[in-house]
Image 1: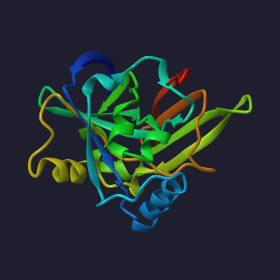
Image 2: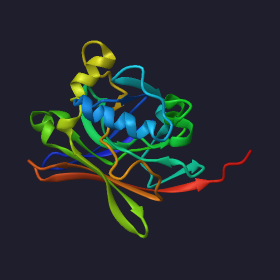
Image 3: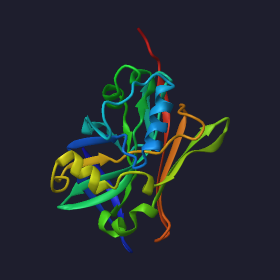
Image 4: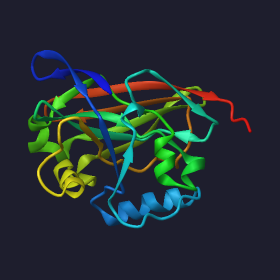
Amino acid sequence: MELKFTIADGQSAAFTATVDNLVVAGWAGRDMAAIEHHIEELFAIGVPRPSAVPLFYRGSANLLTQSERVQVVGGESSGEVETFVFAAGGELFVSIASDHTDRKLETQSVALSKQICAKPVAREAWRLADVAGHWDELVIRSFIQEGGREVLYQEGPLASLRPPMELIAGFCGAGTLPDGTGMLCGTVGAIGGIRPAPVFSMELFDPRLGRTIRHRYAVEILPEVA
C-alpha cells in the first residue's frame, strides 16, 4: 500500500512510503489501571477480555487509507486515534491513524473486527528521531461530531502508553521494524464511552516544538443486509 506523506522538519518534503505489513498493538498502556479501564469499557459493550497485554493483531495493509471518507457496513463502528509508526528507507517515522473498528463484530472477534474496517492515516509525518527525546510529552486527541457539534472524544499524553520501541521489540523480538511495516501503537480511553459518530477528527500534538499532525474523515454507513 502506497502512502504519501509530507515530512515536517523545518522544511516540507514529500515522499511515498510503501507499507506491506500492518500491525495493530492492542492493550498498549503503561498503567495497568488505565488498561483495565479500557478493558472494562469494551467489556461493557460485550468485548471479551484479552488473553494477554499487549497483543499484536495483524491487519491487511490495504486497509490503510488517506481518504477523508470511509465506508462501513452498519452503524456500530467507531474510530480511535493512535500513533502510527512506520519504517521506510531504513528510518522510522511517526504519524497518526484511526483504528476504526466494528464494535458489533468485536464482541465475537477482536481480530476480525479490526480487519473489517479501513484505517485512515494522516498525510503528514515526523521523523521519529526528532521526537524520541520528548515522546512522553506528545499528546493524542480526537473529536467526534455529535448533536451537530464537535466534542472532545479522546485525549491523553503518550506517557500513558508504552513507547514505540518497546512495542516494536515486543513484536519483532529484536532490532527495529523492517522497511514496509507500520504499527498502530495503542490508544487512550473514550470520554463518555465508546460510540459511533458520522465524523472523526484526530491529532498528534507536540507541545515542545509547537506543531500538530491532523486528519479528519467522514463515515458513510452502508446498509447491513442479510
